[in-house]
Amino acid sequence: DADGGAGDGGGAGPESYTLTVRDQKVRIAAPAAAGVFYGTRTLKQEVSGGRTAPEGVVKDRPAKPRRGFMLDIARKHFDVAWIEDRVRELGDLKYNQLGLHFSDDQAFRIASDSHPEIVSTDHLTKDQVRRIVKLAESRHITVVPEIDSPGHLGAVIRQHPSLQLRDARGIAQRGAVDISKPGAAEIVDDLLKEYAELFPGAYWHLGADEYRALTVKDPEASYPQLAAAARERYGADGRVQDLATGWLNDRADTVRPFEKKLKAWNDGFFRGGTEQAADDLEVAYWTGKEIGAREPAEYLRAGRSLVNYNDEYLYYVLGQPNTFRYPTGQRIYESWTPLVLRGTEPVSEKYDDQILGATFAVWCDLAGSQTQEQVARGIRMPLRAMAQKVWDPRKPALSWNDFVKLADTVP
Image (cartoon, rainbow, N blue to C red; front, top):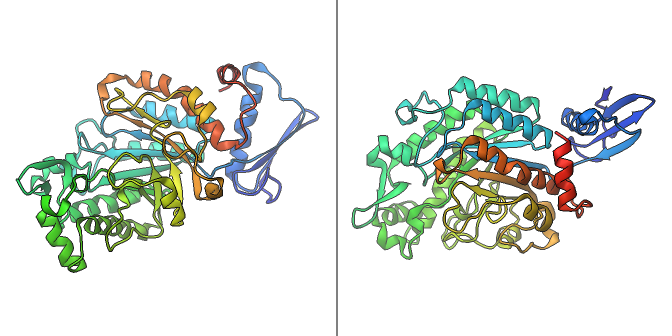
């Protein structure tokens, strides 16, 4: 029996619920359907393996409203059945977001009507995407698309080479479009508008990381065409970072009429210029290593809301290139919390309300280094550990070994 009456769940918020087992009857009450669903997940875990649910009352609610998993389907093609299996797994773990990074230098992985020329051979059809979205909705999971720009657009540039960013010596900068060219904005806006209809959820990721024009010491000297465009748009003091910030704000303006909540990678929030990123943009905080990336507290002091993508704990990078290592569930479980945004040190607890949650991300830099099945096995315990830490803010009562045993006995 489920009752949607407000105030009858496990606390404030639509994801709270109360699970009552009494006289061989089960009642799940919640202020919204999401809470009822999470109550059924708890009941499913209780009775798995032929066990019976003990009599009593459970009042429950998540510590954080954003509990996400992000999948890089651009660098590596994942088949629909695999993605749907992850959706079912995420639902049982009470995740509520699935991010799809489907455009990058290597490939563009979803069919397009506005620019079919950029779509890779191995891709998802729109009907397949709709199927994924529908399954996710049934699990109260929002699918969050990301078309990263103005970097990571190599798949677009291959078909539109005139948009390639080149430095003063004429050397092409991989994956970066020349944002002084109107055609770059036009094609990206075409895609943003097209996919805003395909993804009906309330969230959109604008990317904005690792734009190569801003990874050099003197962008104005290295990219005079960008410097000239910045001065033309922003006056004599306009700089290349202003032009990049203007690009981000323009893309936000393109998506905003579709009533999406917008986010961008933290190293796309540039400082030192005259332009500021729009106030309503959330920060997807993944790194402090990139040029332009700042300490988390600087974004928090400015009043920004953050989602934790800490690359030292929550980045599963195929092939472990550079400084990455495969994250382990034990490390997440024992030493990470949502306050640990960069490295291993937490920010002050006074910022806790601004940290909306966390996302575990699979990045396929060396796509052939693991099969789909190996990825699924590799992320199994990290997903469970993060789920525990974003749902329950208390220090875990179980040891890691006991948590693993529990994970092996419940769905």
